[in-house]
Length: 471
Image 1 (tube, rainbow, N blue to C red):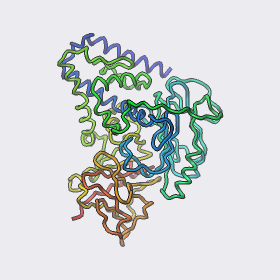
Image 2 (tube, one colour):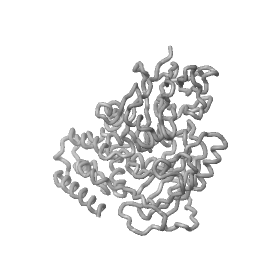
Image 3 (cartoon, rainbow, N blue to C red):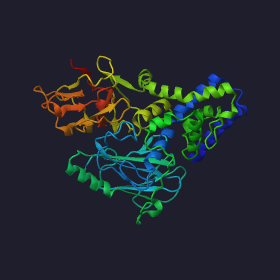
Image 4 (cartoon, rainbow, N blue to C red):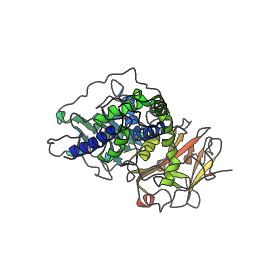
């Protein structure tokens, strides 16, 4: 009934919008068409980005590295390196166990073994990047667990002991993260846990299941970062793909007003987008939409602060509005662009900084320090880390092969009990190297990760320290 009601609401909104627009599209002015197009672009950015990410990550015959065919588990055995380009702002604190599945035809069952109190989480993202469920130590504990991920409109009976998690969309991205210190012994322990994780269609539950090999589409660009591929799409290609994807990945009922706006320029779920229906001035205005859409999305880093969606504390930009977005479409698109796969704030918060305490962009030729007073390191129930990215939010190659700093680096404290973290391209010296996060020669972006943050982080009573340049 809930799905039927949602479809009725969306259908009524679309019919009303279509009825108010002429078949030739002549009734809409270029400026209005462009504004509607930008709104539609921002709204659809997560779904289109998820699809491109899925294509790249599943375009292989068998699991290899960070990729695997649909329905196969990707068990990453080591931290990503600087060569990794599939997802922006990658994580080098946990070993990923991920998969892309299509639950449109039947449910898939995920079986998680006993984690023996190890910290882990297994967020499940729908096609719009919403984290609709997140089993793990914080939410469901670390004992053995089984979940059936069901698609929109599915009804049926599940085996005893299997909990249903309903996905709002057919496409689901399982994005499991298991904490690992990175030592050979801990790698082995996590590998054992990864090997015990099982994923299979419901029809194969409790039966031997060997997923079929994938096929490689030579037309898929496997080298260009996904974000660049999405940003380069023309307006017709982008809107045609968006309309196609919305057929199997239905918008939420709350999206009805947005769908009505989109229908005014011919963007309707399951229907081809026809730019030729408009007069030349309108066509020209719509062709410029991707450029303005990307600019608005990336501009939200600052604009979102004034709107209250993001916070700026001592030069650190972060948000407690991630993972579940509702109708905050610009926030959702922004998080997609800089950190696809972001968790709910209860699971992780990602303070990011692009300028020092002096208000200047970071420059690898300079030296910076983050100072924590005694007893004032980030308060978390899980763990914290600081990651170094280049200005495109990818890892930075360096002689130490070090992409993060955290407690596992055996950080040295100062005589007064305080802790300094060093951000620079050259070593600060052997006595300080344990606290050094290597930076590139040019621009860079540091990002903290607070896994399972304590309430003092979420409510803002604990403050991030500023990053100061060392003269």
